[in-house]
Image 1 (cartoon, rainbow, N blue to C red):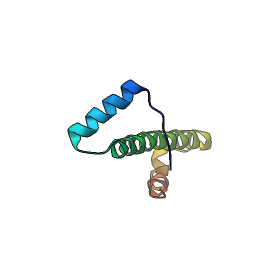
Image 2 (image 1 turned 45 degrees about the vertical axis):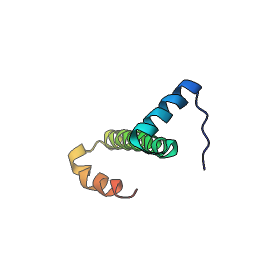
Image 3 (image 1 turned 90 degrees about the vertical axis):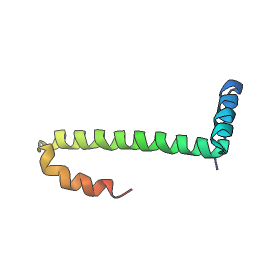
Image 4 (image 1 turned 120 degrees about the vertical axis):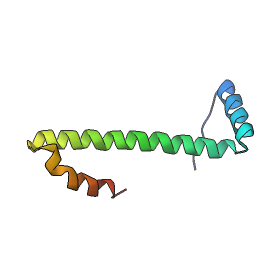
Length: 74
């Protein structure tokens, strides 16, 4: 469970979007947080992959199978 405080303007905008879409504010906020986490989690994985490949001195193409498997670990 997570509680989030929004300023009144953002809360009003969120409520308007929710009404327009026929969804709850919580549903929209949950989707937004999920997208944010997915985006930043993937960016973290890309950076880790880049640093690992660079540190090992290996060619990125030779490690692609490993990283494809790692993506499935979610």
